[in-house]
Image (cartoon, rainbow, N blue to C red; front, side, top):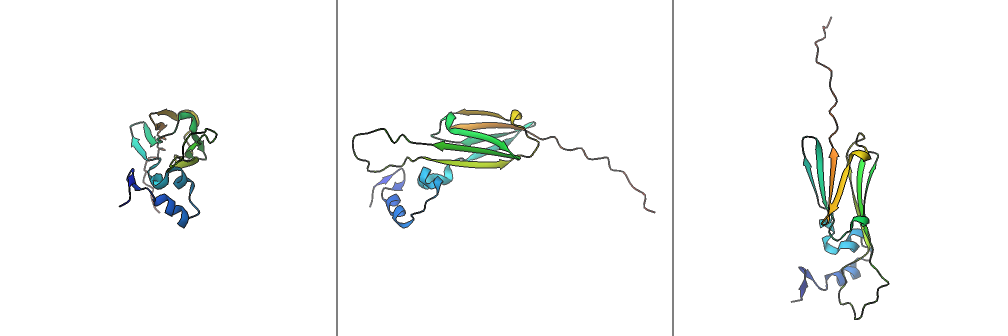
Length: 145
C-alpha cells in the first residue's frame, strides 16, 4: 500500500503527468481539488442577492471583480515566488501559480456602484441589489366585434 497525503496517493500526480501532458490551468493550480475551488452560495433577501465565494489561499489583492455586459466576473490569480531559494529537495510540490475565474449573469440593470464587495478569511462576500420588477399594465377587457 502506498502512503497517502491529504487523501491522495503520493504518486498519483506523477503518473497523471506522464499520461496527460496537457493539463488545464485549474488542475495545475489546485490538482485534483480544482472542482472544489470557487464554491459559491447565493442567498436571496428582500432587497438583494448575497453571494459568498470561497477563495482559500488567496489574498485580497489577488482577487478581481468586474461587471461587464450584465455579467459579474470574479477572478483570482496566484503566483509563487520562484526566486526564493530553499535548502533541501522537494519530494512533492502541490502549490502552483495560476488563475481561476467564474462569471454570473446578473442583468443589464446592475451598476458597479451598486455592488458591494468584502473579502475576509478567504471568502469573497458580494451584495447585489435586486432589479425592480417591471410593472405590467392593468388587465382590461377588449371588446371583440
